[in-house]
Amino acid sequence: MSFTTYVLSVPIEMLVVAVLALIGGVLAIRSIVHASRMRADAFELTGKVSKTGWVAMLVASLIVLLMNALSLGYRMITLVIIAWVIVGVYWGSKRKEMDNLVNFSQDGYGNNWTR
Image (cartoon, rainbow, N blue to C red):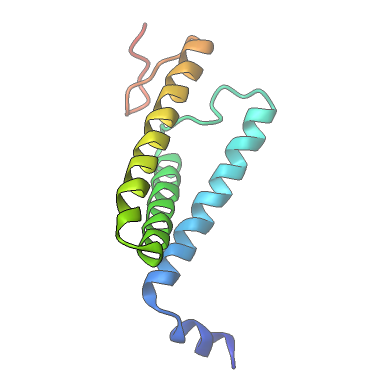
């Protein structure tokens, strides 16, 4: 079976998840590398590319979580949604802590509103 035949036989949802996971994974690795080099902009959400990457990573994780929940049963969907919200709140709180740590706060457009 050739690569093209295999790709065409895979459901489109799986291809979308794979692409989103790839984009999110690459940008997550980039952020970890930047953080290890003590760069203050490692996890910033400013800039079109960075925002796209984080959104892709969140969407891919939500899709995978929901697919797993459906395979385990409908009762798991509530737990998955709760877990996803907890992760989102935790992630948001860490973002604020990092801003406070480097005394650097931005709005969604990259403007520093503390000055």
